[in-house]
Length: 621
Image: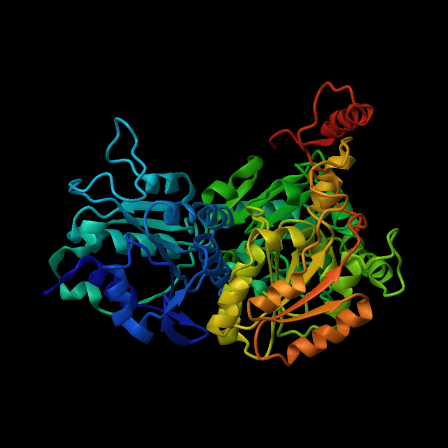
């Protein structure tokens, strides 16, 4: 038994947790992102300081940003490690809530530790405390409850003994994985307890691979044997199960085309013979055509969000049967599917063994390569340096093609929200598996730079020869950019490509496509002072944060800048002005709210089109 403070016990416990990565024993918790305030600086701060390199602390600039960095790290590590983000009470804690939503939607682990008010209540109300009349035990930390998998408030030191192991178990649970939150009242952090030494014994965690029920495996195999047009949808769970090789083998042996969700992108490399392209709203025409005819759809590790399913319109065969392979029963059971609840890698192997030598009809399998080839030809056309846009400015497609031509299999690409998810989901040709991160589960603008910082930390361990390449629009850049400085300060290099298209251009596209007029999205169409809206000098701004910054005005200059950025000793930012109205076409219908009545003819027409499209929508099955 050892007497120590609550804060000291928590840090010592986290240091004792270990994991296996590629055959090596590593810390389960490799570090802490921290912004200190009066809720965590005087107790948790000294405990982290004493930990030193055993639990490194990295200084954040913005609470949301540092938690997004932790999420980017976890994604790049494929959930085999997780980081901690700690804040003071009040606004510091609330700044984490959005990041918690990102982790919750994407099923990614991060441990959030925020200071809280005094359990004694003698000093109440303390600085930054929000008092809720009639509920004195409620604090702003209760706002985390809807967006975390595990929530607790430590009100006595000995509660650490039961709470932290449960938090870690949640963070490592393949089915229940998501953010965990623990509130730390300021007086309780400082209190001591005689903690059992066993709590601090090193533990090497093995992430579970739950096997599916044999009956579920047999039922799935029976459905597939009777299929004439089977299709496999690869989701993010393929990456978290490390199942890319098994996925490729399963698809090849049984002749089943594979399409990818946004989270599942890079489950197969772009040139794999089973790869048919991305599916859904920001998918490709060929992949969606296969989905429209499929009679059995195997959904592996996907929550089947509306962008993957085209608001449940892409699966056009009324007789389609769904097989849901997922560690989470909630996801496996969706849309009256045949659930197979278990680890993706193990389930694919077990269903494959049950299928034996069975293969899909050759005529159906043969449609895979043409679907991917058609996408490739289209991308070559729109990504050509000689392609033109109405404005004469380069397009997103040309930017992606230029960077893609210079990328290597060791590079890791990251983006989020805005126009880049659609452009990269279709346009980026993955050269290696698990090398793509698009935060589209929560579609959080601002994730790009912060998530890139975390990903760069992770990739430095996994593949030090590659670069983390971040694609970000000007709108997201303005929302959250301070972790450019973090990456320079901490020494985690990334290459950031900023496309300046004059505002929230992709939302302007949605606004106009649904019958509205451009309003409050592009800078030019927003209320502003003067005759012309002022333009941001992103090059000067990035340079002021310590980055190497370059401006490119042509695709050729962009290529030259990227080559030069490879040799930079710190984070490099490349800025290029791009066309706001030219986008990669394809994809599927997406249901959004359009007014039932309007005096605007364009909106009336859009509503009529929406009502017609809804007739193709599967109604909950």
